[in-house]
Image 1 (cartoon, protein in one colour):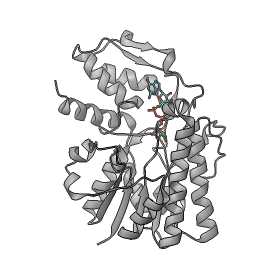
Image 2: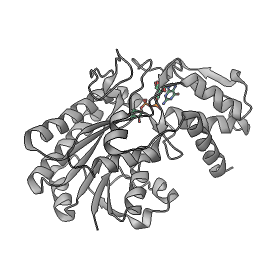
Image 3: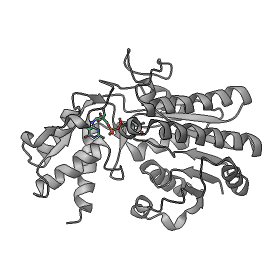
Length: 319
Ligand SMILES: C[C@H]1O[C@H](OP(=O)(O)OP(=O)(O)OC[C@H]2O[C@@H](n3cnc4c(=O)[nH]c(N)nc43)[C@H](O)[C@@H]2O)[C@@H](O)[C@@H](O)C1=O
């Protein structure tokens, strides 16, 4: 039986990935921070009793070394991060510190204890930032425009450097926005779905959003975690874009959800305090490499994903 460590297991991707690994007969060890005890995503997927939780501070290299040494996993999926771009403007230094030092600690520990352990690193499309040519591919110019993106660039190149210098198996999935029922409500799509549902039930007056003159490449999270797993099943490590290949406007998403719930467009209010100091106007990537080399399958249109998310939100809404 293969053993996998998943950091960030309580988040959206961690939960779906853990479920996938369990269904592939893995023993899954979930790294959790001592102060975080919310496993609602794992409970929702009914897998919390199948996971072995390990408390480990990823900023403490001694704890990381001990954890890896004790478990000696085949694979490590590093999904732990301060993942909110908006928050990163408010807490740039702690974002940078966590998102980079945790990666160094994992890689240095793997190198020392067992360099054969395969590592997956969660990189982000935010690294491309000031986009010049679309679609983005694996060779596109990196130009981050937020503290979060800067931290992800540093972590990404730490991985690339150790892979090239020490021949370690480290693959980075460069994921574009990906959504699900389990997404935290701080993120745009979940917020739109949740709050629109509340408006339709007369529990909320309106939907306040920031800049919606923006287009993003959105996908479905449960499918994106499949690409993570596939990356670590290859002969050689590499980096892959994981995206849908199309961008959708934020305004269109709101109007689509409003339309489905019979809400007037006038209920959408622009709130300038939700604007970011800088944002990406339009971004989408090509998923050709992931499809060709990993045999990853993805053909979902994002409006079909919105239908799935709406249905799940309605089904689970507690009055
Ligand atoms: C790939 C990337 O994907 C995610 O980061 P994100 O793109 O910042 O995600 P989001 O859902 O917060 O914003 C999407 C867009 O929506 C705009 N927007 C407008 N109005 C509101 C609004 O009211 N709330 C939010 N949250 N966003 C808004 C906002 O300005 C942005 O342009 C993370 O997984 C990250 O970890 C990651 O790597």
